[in-house]
Amino acid sequence: MATANLVPNGTVKIVMYSLGPYTNLDDIPYDDTDYVYASGIGCSGYYSYTDMPEYGIILGATIYFRCWKVGSDPGYASAGFWIDDNLYSPNTVYPTATPTTYSNSSSNNPKTGVAWTYNDINSIATKLSMAGTWSTTTVYCSQIYIQVNYTPSATPSYFIPKIMKHKSIP
Image (cartoon, rainbow, N blue to C red; front, side, top):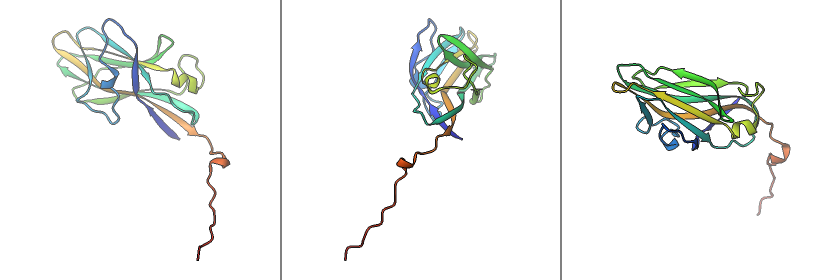
């Protein structure tokens, strides 16, 4: 099995209480000094991703998101697949003060219930939602990306270089 990591490359939807820019979330490995945050009212971000070339058979997709909170009251973070203006398979977590990477996996496209296709993967987005409490808790997120697991295709024989024997020049 092989993996491909897709990082955010744009925002697909702007809402009244939007989280910060995707450039604060696109670091692999993570950078906890570069983040988006929410205090009080819930905020959401809708992020598009880099395209994935066709490498083989897709086995599944996992959203990874790294969050933490500062404050004594609870807050939440939730990430799910955003497909055709609908949210699928959200994973809601209640972060602690320690930055933690959470995940949300789907072996099939959650909209169709069948195996992922490259068209599905290349048109997918994620919705990240977060909220703290008005004055006591802020929730932070420093990373979100999609990891695609796949079985590589066999390399066609015409891509395998041939070893040539050369005569020595006296």
